[in-house]
Amino acid sequence: MKLYYAPASSYSQRVLIALYEKGKNFTPIEVNLFDSIEREEYIQINPFAKIPTLITEKGKVLFEASIILEYLDQHLQKAPYLIPLDPKQALEVRMLERIVDVYINGGREALFADSQRPVEERGKKEVIKAHRLLESAIALLDEKLAGRTWLGGEEFSLADCAAAPTLAYLRMVYNYNHFSNLIDYVRRLESRPSVAQVQRSGREQMTQMLSTLCYPLELVPLDKFAWS
Ligand SMILES: N[C@@H](CCC(=O)N[C@@H](CS)C(=O)NCC(=O)O)C(=O)O
Image 1 (cartoon, helix red, strand yellow):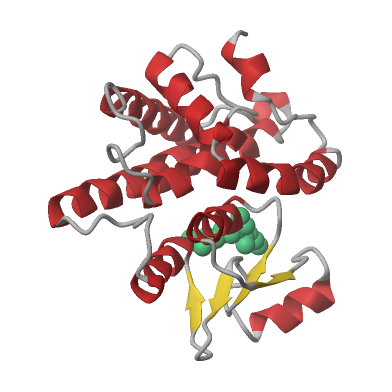
Image 2 (image 1 turned 90 degrees about the vertical axis):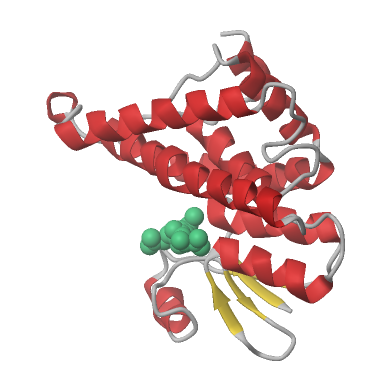
């Protein structure tokens, strides 16, 4: 099994967390999409030029982080099951993963892009809308997490694999530290060995990328954030 990825890429991190959780050996192939030659070569594998891509042992090419995770569950048949076997719980987990992806990650990307515009061009209508959706999604997650260990319940799942990198990078541009269930959850998440390992290996590349921004942003460690 081969994984095309980048250490700081949040979608790659979702898959890495899943692979570590399942203890699956794989061949990591790092891709630098900023290098035009590498990018051209990579387009032969993934026409969308997006990472991650998984090549299975049978040579099947899989795109989209959530589909790769679904494949790992089906193929490895090994706990933790990232999509619960119970259909009702599976629906809940898939719904939460979509909310994290569309509204939280979408909002994060919109706020990140906005932070890199000249001050007088910031806060346009689309950004305000994305911000509102992000806030609603964060409030919903905080509510869901009352009495739950992980997003979908007591088992670590697809939704947590998506939430870990998204909520860590979100701290650069959005403050959610008044949501106490969410903060406690992120503390549990970032203490989990698979997540801690992925965050450690992505830190250097992300810090390097942030150092090239016009308007500076920084990775905010949870300890600093939770008390700010
Ligand atoms: N929907 C895709 C999104 C993948 C994605 O956006 N990956 C980012 C890195 S985190 C990427 O490849 N960006 C490069 C680009 O957009 O040029 C998935 O779930 O895998």
